[in-house]
Image 1 (tube, one colour):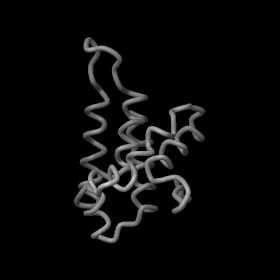
Image 2 (tube, rainbow, N blue to C red):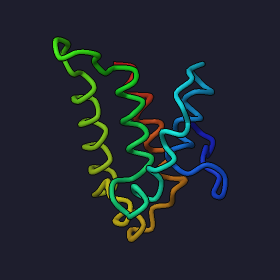
Image 3 (cartoon, rainbow, N blue to C red):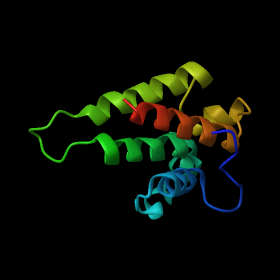
Image 4 (cartoon, one colour):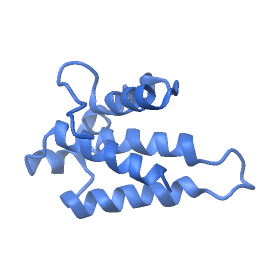
Length: 119
C-alpha cells in the first residue's frame, strides 16, 4: 500500500488497521477490538498495530476448536519476526525511542499482514 493509512487524532493505530482491513476486504471485524491496543496496550508494550494485525490473522487463519491446527500462531510469529528484523523490536516504547512513527509502523504492519494472509 503506497498511501499512509494512519491519521493522528482519528482512530488509534490498532483501530486503523482493523478499519482499513474491513474497508478493503468487505469484512465486519469490530473496530472496537483495537480500542485498548493503541499506544502499546496503553502502556508502551507491544505495538497496537502489530497486535491488530495479529487479531486479523487470527480472524482469517485461526482455529475454532482444539482439533484444528493453529495456523494463525505460525503466521503471527512470522509477523513478529519480520517486525523485529525491520525495526529491532515490536515494543511500542522501543519503536518510539528509535523515532519510528506511528504512520510507518501502521503501514508496515498492514502490508506485512496482507502478505502473510496470502499464504
